[in-house]
Amino acid sequence: MSSVPIDSATFRDAMSSVAAPVTVVTTMDGATPYGTTVSSFSSLSMTPPLVMFALDGRSRLLTALQRNPRLAINILGHGQEGLATTFAQPRADRFCDSGWYTSAGLPRLPGIAAWFECRGEQLITAGDHEIVLATVLSAEIFDGLPLLYTQRTFGTHSALLSAACPIRRQ
Image (cartoon, rainbow, N blue to C red; front, side):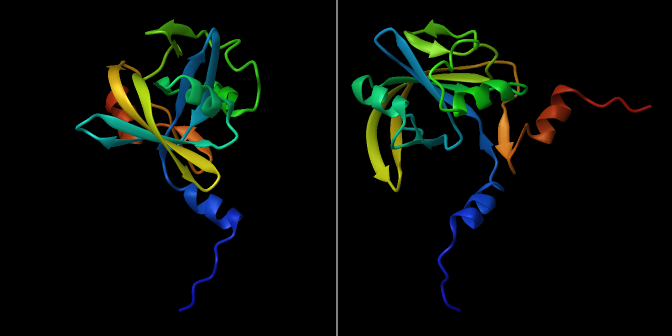
């Protein structure tokens, strides 16, 4: 069997089958907040506590992180599709209607499922993206269900929905 190079459309379609948590990574550069939606977030190590995510090499957030390595990871909650879409678009006013506030000097979004305060440790160039390795300094978990993205659709894990909203049978 010979190896045939995969085209970008097939690769994109195949990757859409992978469920991912929807996160908004944020930082401050002076008084200016920066943030973007990231679906490549993952834990990396327990000791030390490390996470990783990837940013487009042209990202304004990446440029801000190179000046200030402190960052926050906002794990969006179920029903926050609008925030995910807003922070995924190339707009300068992403924070305008988000209700954001600062926590530990970093931008935090309301209604999220979890929040991580981190310090960027290393950037690794990989294709057209930079992989960011970050140490987790603190974390908070909230009652809401996490927002997931798979097959180009937002949702949450069905077992989580069942546990949060049990079906009454008669």
